[in-house]
Length: 345
Image 1 (tube, rainbow, N blue to C red):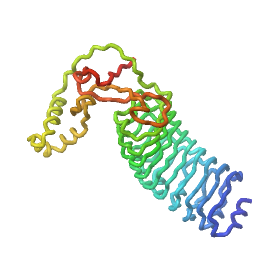
Image 2: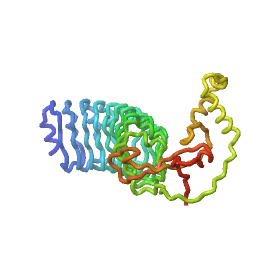
Image 3: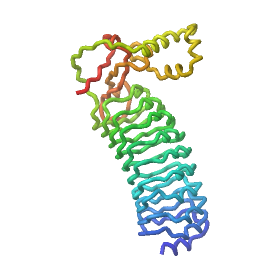
């Protein structure tokens, strides 16, 4: 019946809606509607998409949500005009390499409620992608390549098995919304502080104890982090002893302090040693004295009141623990800086 309906359509038809028609297969006659822009196939029992769909060169929106697809349909990579693809609530387990890399016009991709365990590394070629939705899958990691999508504005990856995030996360200059609730994430990368357009961060129900150093620099308007084992401000007495720094650390600190002077001889000579320059570029700065240090630090925490210190409009809790790095116990023992040492039970 659906086949007859499709055959009766004119070639210049722009939209076909076959939602909820109990289809087990896609009518092949659809390929005759060459000017088709929107194809709705939601709420059926479709297990695969026919190769004939590749003829729909003008197709921009394809909705195959709530069906029985077991693999990401390879045929869609031939729909070069495709901008929005809905594949939610299917039975997809894998995405073969070479499919997403050809979908360079895609702006919106919805893969919610599937069984996907891994994303292909070649997805970084989807230069126009703005929204990636992966809620309710079985992902244990996000590939670093996802961080090189120049126009990505939203990532939805709630209810997965994520334990970490790529350290390159800060490269997502256009990212505005990051939804990561109901995972197993233990730590957020420091690169999060470079997301200058991020306005919503949802990391509720993870395993976070502390937030990145530069979180206050992020222009967040909404932050949700309830149901995490975050550090609490419970001061306890502790006897601190000065550490013995390694020769490498002492040398690095001396050099970084010396090269602040523009007339420094070391400042001129270090240019001849690119490996040393690269190593020193990874240095951190003490939250108290602002001196640079390389590898040896004291991990501390400060507790920020969100409405006063960060100006977040919507938040699930009023106070947030933020990581701070100090260069020495001398700085740690300075009076009045507001940083606490981190003590684990």
